[in-house]
Amino acid sequence: MIIVVANSKGGVGKSTLAVHLAAWLFHQGHRVTLADCDTQQSSSEWIREARPEVRTVRLDNPDIILNELPVLAQDADFVVADGPGSQTETSRALLLRGDLAIVPCKASMLEVRALAKATDVLRQAQDIRGGHPKAVIVLSMVGKNYRLTQDMKDAAAALSLPLASAAMILRQIYADAPGQGAVVWDMGARARDAANEADQLFREILPHAVRRPAAISAVRKKTTSR
Ligand SMILES: Nc1ncnc2c1ncn2[C@@H]1O[C@H](COP(=O)(O)OP(=O)(O)OP(=O)(O)O)[C@@H](O)[C@H]1O
Ligand SMILES: [Mg+2]
Image (cartoon, rainbow, N blue to C red; front, side, top):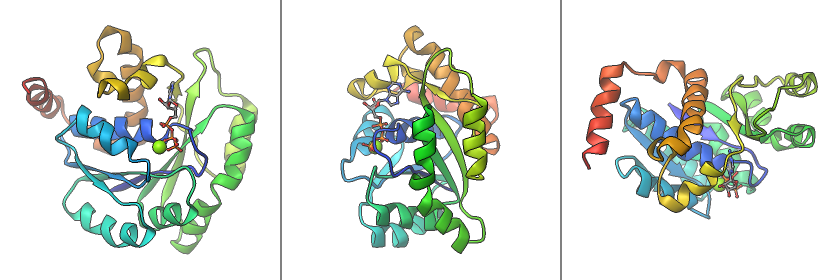
């Protein structure tokens, strides 16, 4: 399965979500490749430190993305593609190849309204491909006491995009994680709430990717014995 993390707006939490998703899928016992499709290459550097077991590739050209993503998908259970914050052609290539698009969006009405524009390319791809890729909006950098307002639900519904009920809360720990070459599940008690919420989010979006506890503890053992 090819999962594309895409929003043509910059700085909405794409790389943070992509790296945590790749690490989470690895913990569920899957073979995972992270395709870093942003010229900044921040997510591939981050995951290499945090989870060297996750294969990384850098694909920053639309033609290479169109050609290589299906090949990568043959050798992995999941390919997580981290998209760029601009570069429409790169996003288009990703959305023409992806099976699922996760669209992180900051939780303000202004950002949600901007989503109509930011998801133009997604809608084109769905139109061409008979509804694929499936897509879900994930609210990122949400205030702790945030409640999903009816306005936001309406805005998402107007775009015909489902909104995940779990969200990524604005927490310093997410911003600290790349500097420590870690993901929130490695960062102890201070990161417990973030670790739980990320787990809950990915379980909601990808229920079929959740593996049996035995598989998870085997992977954990391998990781912690490094
Ligand atoms: N939930 C969060 N809480 C706090 N900070 C966050 C959260 N998610 C991301 N950040 C921080 O916000 C900034 C932007 O996040 P990130 O790099 O993941 O976004 P992006 O969409 O990949 O950006 P770009 O479009 O530039 O690739 C980073 O400094 C990151 O550490
Ligand atoms: Mg990024």
